[in-house]
Image (cartoon, rainbow, N blue to C red):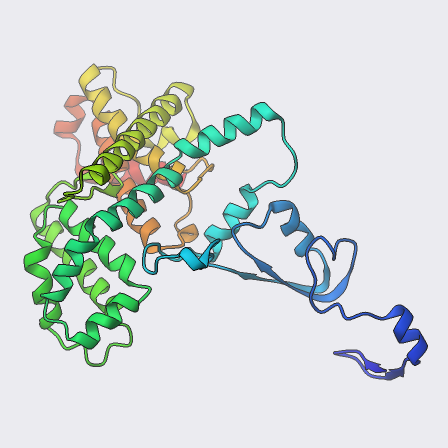
Length: 362
């Protein structure tokens, strides 16, 4: 065997006997097998099932470089998967989940506590809710797509697109904000040609999203949102699905209120950016309702920073960006509510906004 360095000069001939006894191909290996080895460059595949201990091993094998290839479309059972039911997650979100995924043994009581917290967490509950909502409303949205003016080929393209899930979520969001999506969507389809669209579903999602922001902004309708973040599914006719959705709806509302009350009572640093809790009971309840939205956002995206919403640069998806905007609006309302009544009447709006900005940047 003749070998040479990838970025170096010189060649070396290895005898057959030496190769047979001491050389083996090692361009691919498991994380467990490569522990203790060192290579020039390491290229590792990471999925949501990777533990943080294994991630450490994978990121410390290379002398010159360590590269990660993150699976953002992971499916533990592809044979039973349903296309379009879930949105791909960002690489940053996958890695954040890996860092929370411990492989080391922990005490039994700690495992019970973590399992209970995970089952009641916003990430788990919201994922279950959105999956159920997609199933419950799929027939209705499919009917809307079929009579919207799309051609047969365009309908097939929408059904097969990865953007179908986000498109249906945009329908739900528009409806939760008090808009008549069934009347408006056909106009959004036929108002401009789709002939040049590379991904029809993605283009339609963009149109619905822009229309929703513009229309809801003009009419200033309050959103029908769970914990101030997640659009409620409407028009669900299946009683079992309606019950399942209502249960998760209530669980998320309870979770957000509990987290907000605990944070305010403990004086957690991120709450300081939302103003001082009012002493008057009714105003305090209104203030806590806004704090609940921020608490729900922090729980959903696993934020632990002192800044209420973390850094905007850490946002990794359209879903998170939308929820961050809603949480930002909740902060503004919380700061306004926290002001004494006389200051609310006399204080200029720009002063409230300046206080909100200072709170968010802490």
